[in-house]
Amino acid sequence: MRVTLGGVGFKNPILVASGTYGYGSEAKDHCDISGLGGIVTKSVSWKPRQGNYPRRIVETASGMLNSIGLANVGVHAFVDEKLPYLENFDTKIIANIAASSMEEYCNVLSHIESHATKNLAGYEINVSCPNVKDGGLSFGTNVERVEELTKALRPLTKKLLIIKLTPNVTSVAPFAKACEDSGADAISLINTVIGMSVDIHSRMPRISTVTGGLSGPAIKPIALAKVYEARKSCSLPIIGIGGITTASDVMEFLIVGASLVQIGTANFVNPNIGNEIAAELEEILAKQGITNVKDIVGTLKVSDQMKSLGW
Image 1 (tube, rainbow, N blue to C red):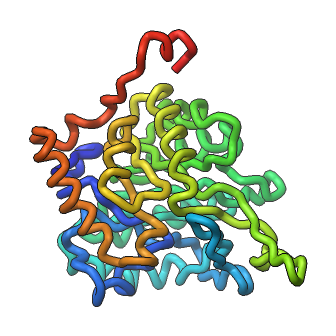
Image 2: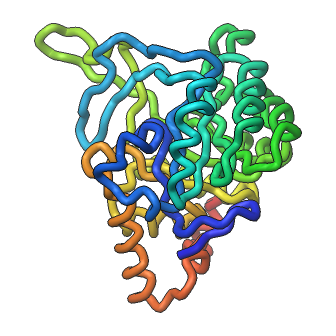
C-alpha cells in the first residue's frame, strides 16, 4: 500500500482533502489519524479570514454546495498552534496555501517553510483563488499565471510542491503541462465545480454568494475525466479528488492515472472513512492478486477504436 511521491513515502494512497478535515485536531476523537496516508490541511493565508457570511453550505443531490470563503486562522497561528499539534501523528502533512496575489503565496510558503515540522511533506497550492492584479480572476483559469506562480514558488522549498487545479476550464491539459514544465512535483485535481441551488418558495439562492463549489459523488465522473485528461498530457504524479466514498472509487482513479487520492465530502458523513477505505482497498488488491498498489496506476484499457477517436 506504500506510495512514493517525489521521494516522500506515504503509508497508503489515501489522503484527506483540504477543507474537509480542518487542521486534524477536529477529527482526533473520531478517527485514527495516524492510519491515514496523509492530511491536507485547511487552506491557510497570510492573515486570518472569517470567510463568507452564512448560509454557506447546502446539501444537493448526491453532493454538497459550499462557499466557505477560505476561512482560516492565518499562517502565524498555523505555524504556532496547528503544525506542532500535527507533529504528534505518524502521517504526512501537506499544507494547503490560498492567497490573493503571487506575493502572498510566496510569503505564506516561506513562513511555513521556516517553521516546518518533521512530518510536513510539502505544500498544495490552491490556484482557484482570486488574482487581485488581474481584477479578481482565478489564478487557476490562466495558464500563464499558473506557470508563473509555480516558477516563483519552486525555489522556496525542496519539499513537495503540488498544484491543485480547477475543473472550471475548457481543458486541464495545458495547465497540467505548465505545472510540469515549471517544476511542480505533482498536481491534484479536481477542485470543486461551480454550481448553485435555489429555494423555490423564496426564489432566492440557498447560499449567500449565489454560486459555490459543488463536491461529492455527483462530480466523480467529471473528476475521473479530468484526471485522465491530465494523465495524457503530462508525466507528473497525480492526486485524484472528487466524489470518492468507496475503495472501488479509489480504484477507478488509480486506473485512469492517479497515484494517490484525496477523500473530501465523505469525511463530513464519516470522519473515519479514510481508514475504512484504505482497509477495503487492500482487500480488493489482494483479491485481484495485486501485490503493490502502484501496479494498478494508469492501467486503463482503451480500444484501438477509442484511440482513433483521440482517447
